[in-house]
Image (cartoon, rainbow, N blue to C red; front, top):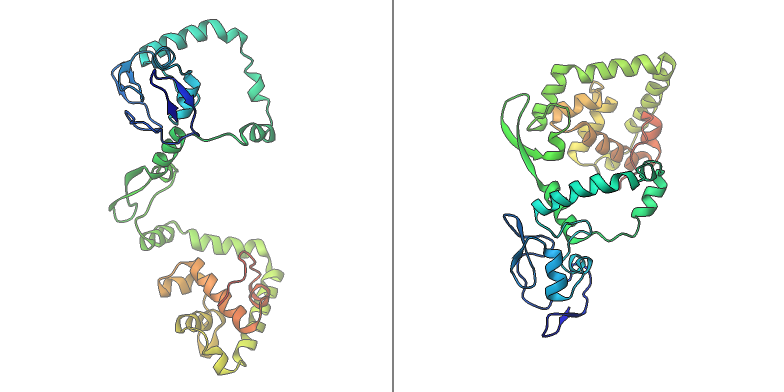
Length: 284
Protein backbone atom coordinates (compact mmCIF):
# COMPACT_ATOMS: atom_id res chain seq x y z
CA UNK A 1 0.00 0.00 0.00
CA UNK A 2 1.22 3.52 -0.81
CA UNK A 3 0.01 6.57 1.15
CA UNK A 4 0.98 10.12 0.28
CA UNK A 5 1.75 12.92 2.75
CA UNK A 6 -1.86 14.07 3.11
CA UNK A 7 -2.99 10.58 4.04
CA UNK A 8 -4.68 9.56 0.80
CA UNK A 9 -4.16 6.08 -0.62
CA UNK A 10 -2.73 5.98 -4.13
CA UNK A 11 -2.36 2.20 -4.42
CA UNK A 12 -4.42 -0.52 -2.73
CA UNK A 13 -2.78 -3.78 -1.54
CA UNK A 14 -4.16 -7.27 -1.95
CA UNK A 15 -6.62 -8.50 0.66
CA UNK A 16 -4.90 -9.28 3.96
CA UNK A 17 -1.55 -7.91 2.76
CA UNK A 18 0.50 -6.25 5.47
CA UNK A 19 0.41 -2.47 4.85
CA UNK A 20 3.75 -0.73 4.31
CA UNK A 21 3.26 1.64 7.26
CA UNK A 22 3.17 1.11 11.05
CA UNK A 23 -0.19 -0.30 12.08
CA UNK A 24 -2.31 0.33 15.15
CA UNK A 25 -4.07 -2.81 16.36
CA UNK A 26 -4.13 -6.12 14.46
CA UNK A 27 -5.01 -7.04 10.92
CA UNK A 28 -8.39 -8.73 10.65
CA UNK A 29 -9.57 -7.38 14.02
CA UNK A 30 -11.08 -4.15 15.37
CA UNK A 31 -9.81 -2.80 18.68
CA UNK A 32 -12.56 -1.25 20.81
CA UNK A 33 -12.60 1.05 23.82
CA UNK A 34 -16.12 1.19 25.18
CA UNK A 35 -18.29 2.54 22.37
CA UNK A 36 -15.40 3.61 20.14
CA UNK A 37 -13.35 1.81 17.46
CA UNK A 38 -9.62 2.31 16.85
CA UNK A 39 -8.41 3.41 13.42
CA UNK A 40 -5.65 1.16 12.07
CA UNK A 41 -3.97 4.15 10.37
CA UNK A 42 -3.80 6.88 13.00
CA UNK A 43 -4.56 4.96 16.21
CA UNK A 44 -7.34 7.33 17.38
CA UNK A 45 -10.74 6.06 18.56
CA UNK A 46 -14.04 7.06 16.94
CA UNK A 47 -17.72 6.25 17.39
CA UNK A 48 -18.11 6.23 13.60
CA UNK A 49 -14.89 4.87 12.15
CA UNK A 50 -16.49 4.80 8.70
CA UNK A 51 -17.01 8.55 8.69
CA UNK A 52 -13.48 9.13 10.01
CA UNK A 53 -11.70 7.13 7.30
CA UNK A 54 -13.65 8.97 4.60
CA UNK A 55 -12.98 12.44 5.99
CA UNK A 56 -9.54 11.90 7.53
CA UNK A 57 -7.87 9.45 5.15
CA UNK A 58 -9.80 9.81 1.90
CA UNK A 59 -10.76 6.15 1.92
CA UNK A 60 -14.13 4.47 1.49
CA UNK A 61 -15.36 2.07 4.16
CA UNK A 62 -15.26 -0.95 1.85
CA UNK A 63 -11.66 -0.11 0.90
CA UNK A 64 -10.74 0.11 4.59
CA UNK A 65 -12.25 -3.32 5.27
CA UNK A 66 -10.48 -4.82 2.26
CA UNK A 67 -7.08 -3.40 3.22
CA UNK A 68 -7.17 -4.45 6.85
CA UNK A 69 -8.73 -7.91 6.33
CA UNK A 70 -12.16 -7.16 7.81
CA UNK A 71 -15.31 -8.86 6.63
CA UNK A 72 -17.44 -6.93 4.16
CA UNK A 73 -20.31 -6.97 6.70
CA UNK A 74 -18.26 -5.77 9.70
CA UNK A 75 -19.74 -2.54 11.06
CA UNK A 76 -17.34 0.42 11.33
CA UNK A 77 -19.43 2.14 14.00
CA UNK A 78 -19.69 1.69 17.77
CA UNK A 79 -22.22 -0.69 19.35
CA UNK A 80 -24.70 2.03 20.44
CA UNK A 81 -24.78 3.73 17.05
CA UNK A 82 -25.00 0.34 15.38
CA UNK A 83 -28.04 -0.54 17.52
CA UNK A 84 -29.76 2.72 16.60
CA UNK A 85 -29.14 2.17 12.89
CA UNK A 86 -30.29 -1.44 13.09
CA UNK A 87 -33.56 -0.45 14.74
CA UNK A 88 -34.12 2.24 12.12
CA UNK A 89 -33.38 -0.15 9.29
CA UNK A 90 -35.76 -2.79 10.64
CA UNK A 91 -38.53 -0.21 10.97
CA UNK A 92 -38.04 1.42 7.58
CA UNK A 93 -36.60 -1.22 5.24
CA UNK A 94 -38.28 -4.48 6.29
CA UNK A 95 -41.31 -3.94 4.05
CA UNK A 96 -39.00 -3.65 1.01
CA UNK A 97 -37.02 -6.86 1.62
CA UNK A 98 -37.92 -10.07 -0.18
CA UNK A 99 -36.90 -12.83 2.24
CA UNK A 100 -38.18 -15.53 -0.11
CA UNK A 101 -35.32 -14.81 -2.52
CA UNK A 102 -32.78 -16.63 -0.31
CA UNK A 103 -35.21 -19.23 1.02
CA UNK A 104 -36.15 -20.38 -2.48
CA UNK A 105 -32.56 -20.88 -3.65
CA UNK A 106 -31.55 -24.45 -4.42
CA UNK A 107 -28.32 -25.89 -2.90
CA UNK A 108 -26.67 -25.55 -6.31
CA UNK A 109 -27.62 -21.86 -6.54
CA UNK A 110 -26.34 -21.19 -3.03
CA UNK A 111 -23.05 -22.91 -3.90
CA UNK A 112 -22.74 -20.89 -7.11
CA UNK A 113 -23.24 -17.65 -5.18
CA UNK A 114 -20.50 -18.52 -2.69
CA UNK A 115 -18.05 -19.88 -5.27
CA UNK A 116 -15.09 -17.62 -5.87
CA UNK A 117 -15.73 -15.40 -2.87
CA UNK A 118 -12.66 -14.31 -0.98
CA UNK A 119 -12.47 -15.35 2.68
CA UNK A 120 -11.06 -12.39 4.54
CA UNK A 121 -8.70 -12.45 7.47
CA UNK A 122 -11.36 -11.73 10.10
CA UNK A 123 -13.37 -14.78 9.03
CA UNK A 124 -10.26 -16.98 8.91
CA UNK A 125 -9.36 -15.90 12.45
CA UNK A 126 -12.86 -16.70 13.72
CA UNK A 127 -12.90 -20.13 12.05
CA UNK A 128 -9.46 -21.03 13.40
CA UNK A 129 -10.46 -19.98 16.92
CA UNK A 130 -13.68 -22.00 16.83
CA UNK A 131 -11.86 -25.13 15.65
CA UNK A 132 -9.26 -24.88 18.42
CA UNK A 133 -11.67 -24.08 21.27
CA UNK A 134 -11.59 -26.79 23.93
CA UNK A 135 -14.05 -27.51 26.74
CA UNK A 136 -13.70 -29.70 29.83
CA UNK A 137 -15.90 -32.80 30.20
CA UNK A 138 -15.96 -35.79 32.55
CA UNK A 139 -15.43 -39.38 31.44
CA UNK A 140 -18.68 -41.38 31.56
CA UNK A 141 -16.84 -44.41 32.99
CA UNK A 142 -14.04 -43.31 35.35
CA UNK A 143 -15.10 -39.71 35.95
CA UNK A 144 -11.72 -38.31 34.90
CA UNK A 145 -11.81 -34.71 33.62
CA UNK A 146 -10.35 -34.12 30.16
CA UNK A 147 -10.75 -31.64 27.32
CA UNK A 148 -12.26 -32.15 23.87
CA UNK A 149 -13.19 -29.86 20.99
CA UNK A 150 -16.26 -27.73 21.60
CA UNK A 151 -17.96 -29.03 18.45
CA UNK A 152 -17.66 -32.60 19.74
CA UNK A 153 -18.89 -31.66 23.21
CA UNK A 154 -22.16 -30.39 21.74
CA UNK A 155 -23.04 -33.85 20.44
CA UNK A 156 -25.68 -35.72 22.48
CA UNK A 157 -23.42 -38.57 23.57
CA UNK A 158 -21.41 -39.71 26.57
CA UNK A 159 -17.69 -39.04 26.28
CA UNK A 160 -14.83 -41.28 27.38
CA UNK A 161 -11.20 -40.42 28.09
CA UNK A 162 -9.49 -43.51 26.62
CA UNK A 163 -10.09 -46.50 24.33
CA UNK A 164 -10.42 -48.77 27.40
CA UNK A 165 -13.20 -46.60 28.83
CA UNK A 166 -14.89 -46.52 25.42
CA UNK A 167 -14.87 -50.31 25.19
CA UNK A 168 -16.23 -50.56 28.74
CA UNK A 169 -19.03 -48.15 27.86
CA UNK A 170 -19.96 -50.24 24.84
CA UNK A 171 -19.80 -53.42 26.94
CA UNK A 172 -22.16 -51.96 29.56
CA UNK A 173 -24.59 -50.81 26.89
CA UNK A 174 -24.44 -54.17 25.12
CA UNK A 175 -23.80 -52.45 21.81
CA UNK A 176 -21.43 -55.03 20.35
CA UNK A 177 -23.48 -58.09 21.30
CA UNK A 178 -26.70 -56.53 20.06
CA UNK A 179 -25.02 -55.51 16.81
CA UNK A 180 -23.70 -59.04 16.20
CA UNK A 181 -27.07 -60.66 16.92
CA UNK A 182 -28.92 -58.16 14.74
CA UNK A 183 -26.47 -58.77 11.88
CA UNK A 184 -27.01 -62.50 12.04
CA UNK A 185 -30.81 -62.08 12.10
CA UNK A 186 -30.76 -59.72 9.12
CA UNK A 187 -28.37 -61.74 6.98
CA UNK A 188 -30.29 -64.99 7.02
CA UNK A 189 -29.00 -68.54 7.29
CA UNK A 190 -28.13 -68.87 3.59
CA UNK A 191 -25.93 -65.75 3.56
CA UNK A 192 -24.19 -66.77 6.79
CA UNK A 193 -23.49 -70.24 5.37
CA UNK A 194 -21.95 -68.78 2.19
CA UNK A 195 -19.89 -66.33 4.25
CA UNK A 196 -18.53 -69.05 6.53
CA UNK A 197 -17.85 -71.33 3.54
CA UNK A 198 -15.72 -68.67 1.85
CA UNK A 199 -13.84 -68.03 5.07
CA UNK A 200 -13.18 -71.76 5.46
CA UNK A 201 -11.87 -71.94 1.87
CA UNK A 202 -9.41 -69.10 2.55
CA UNK A 203 -8.28 -70.82 5.77
CA UNK A 204 -7.57 -73.99 3.80
CA UNK A 205 -5.44 -72.05 1.29
CA UNK A 206 -3.51 -70.41 4.12
CA UNK A 207 -2.73 -73.76 5.79
CA UNK A 208 -0.96 -75.12 2.71
CA UNK A 209 1.15 -72.01 2.13
CA UNK A 210 4.93 -72.25 2.25
CA UNK A 211 6.22 -71.43 5.73
CA UNK A 212 8.75 -68.98 4.32
CA UNK A 213 5.93 -66.97 2.75
CA UNK A 214 4.04 -66.81 6.05
CA UNK A 215 7.21 -65.73 7.88
CA UNK A 216 7.31 -62.54 5.81
CA UNK A 217 4.48 -61.28 8.06
CA UNK A 218 5.12 -59.64 11.40
CA UNK A 219 4.49 -61.62 14.60
CA UNK A 220 1.41 -59.52 15.37
CA UNK A 221 -0.08 -60.10 11.91
CA UNK A 222 0.57 -63.86 12.10
CA UNK A 223 -1.23 -63.91 15.45
CA UNK A 224 -4.21 -61.97 14.08
CA UNK A 225 -4.38 -64.22 11.01
CA UNK A 226 -4.18 -67.39 13.12
CA UNK A 227 -6.90 -66.26 15.54
CA UNK A 228 -9.31 -65.15 12.82
CA UNK A 229 -8.97 -68.16 10.51
CA UNK A 230 -8.27 -70.75 13.23
CA UNK A 231 -4.78 -71.69 12.02
CA UNK A 232 -2.29 -73.89 13.91
CA UNK A 233 -5.04 -75.42 16.03
CA UNK A 234 -6.26 -72.08 17.42
CA UNK A 235 -9.97 -71.49 17.93
CA UNK A 236 -11.57 -69.08 15.48
CA UNK A 237 -12.31 -65.64 16.94
CA UNK A 238 -14.16 -62.60 15.70
CA UNK A 239 -12.35 -59.37 14.89
CA UNK A 240 -13.87 -57.76 17.99
CA UNK A 241 -12.59 -60.57 20.21
CA UNK A 242 -9.12 -60.27 18.66
CA UNK A 243 -9.14 -56.52 19.25
CA UNK A 244 -9.99 -57.00 22.93
CA UNK A 245 -7.32 -59.68 23.33
CA UNK A 246 -4.54 -57.60 21.74
CA UNK A 247 -5.64 -54.20 23.02
CA UNK A 248 -6.27 -52.82 19.52
CA UNK A 249 -9.23 -51.19 17.86
CA UNK A 250 -11.43 -53.41 15.71
CA UNK A 251 -10.66 -51.17 12.72
CA UNK A 252 -6.91 -51.75 13.19
CA UNK A 253 -7.50 -55.50 13.36
CA UNK A 254 -9.56 -55.33 10.17
CA UNK A 255 -6.86 -53.36 8.32
CA UNK A 256 -4.01 -55.64 9.36
CA UNK A 257 -6.03 -58.81 8.71
CA UNK A 258 -7.03 -57.65 5.26
CA UNK A 259 -3.52 -56.46 4.36
CA UNK A 260 -1.91 -59.74 5.49
CA UNK A 261 -4.47 -61.90 3.64
CA UNK A 262 -4.11 -59.94 0.45
CA UNK A 263 -0.32 -60.06 0.76
CA UNK A 264 -0.35 -63.84 0.93
CA UNK A 265 -3.21 -64.78 -1.40
CA UNK A 266 -3.89 -61.86 -3.74
CA UNK A 267 -5.81 -58.63 -3.87
CA UNK A 268 -9.34 -60.09 -3.82
CA UNK A 269 -8.86 -62.89 -1.32
CA UNK A 270 -10.04 -61.14 1.81
CA UNK A 271 -12.98 -59.45 0.07
CA UNK A 272 -14.18 -62.85 -1.12
CA UNK A 273 -13.67 -64.39 2.31
CA UNK A 274 -15.39 -61.76 4.43
CA UNK A 275 -17.62 -59.82 2.08
CA UNK A 276 -16.03 -56.58 3.30
CA UNK A 277 -14.95 -54.05 0.67
CA UNK A 278 -14.84 -50.83 2.66
CA UNK A 279 -11.17 -49.99 2.26
CA UNK A 280 -8.75 -49.74 -0.62
CA UNK A 281 -5.96 -52.37 -0.81
CA UNK A 282 -3.00 -51.56 1.41
CA UNK A 283 0.61 -52.31 0.63
CA UNK A 284 2.05 -54.69 3.12
